[in-house]
Length: 89
Image 1 (cartoon, helix red, strand yellow):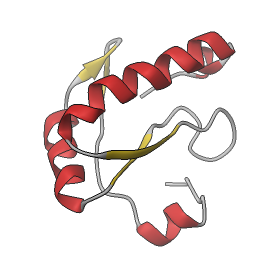
Image 2 (cartoon, one colour; image 1 turned 90 degrees about the vertical axis):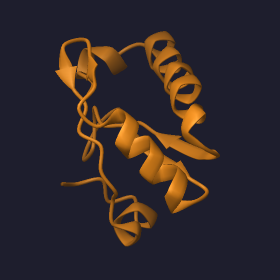
Image 3 (cartoon, one colour; image 1 turned 60 degrees about the vertical axis):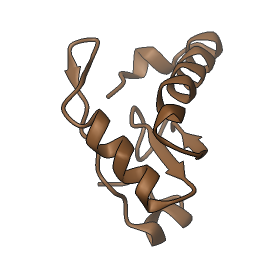
């Protein structure tokens, strides 16, 4: 979804976090946003909602949308991998 250039500066990173929060809060109670800046999962955005229903609303609304010419791929993540902070594919 993102490029490494998008995450280089703290200002850009913070703006992306805030924009993501503003956009994705409309789908339900957004509990956490994780955007790894390096390593596994870098350039991906991980959203945690308080309910699976809210997460499903976000997936339905976001999947297939475009951001800066790139198509969003939205899906559920394995919960155990999430809790282990294993952001690999």
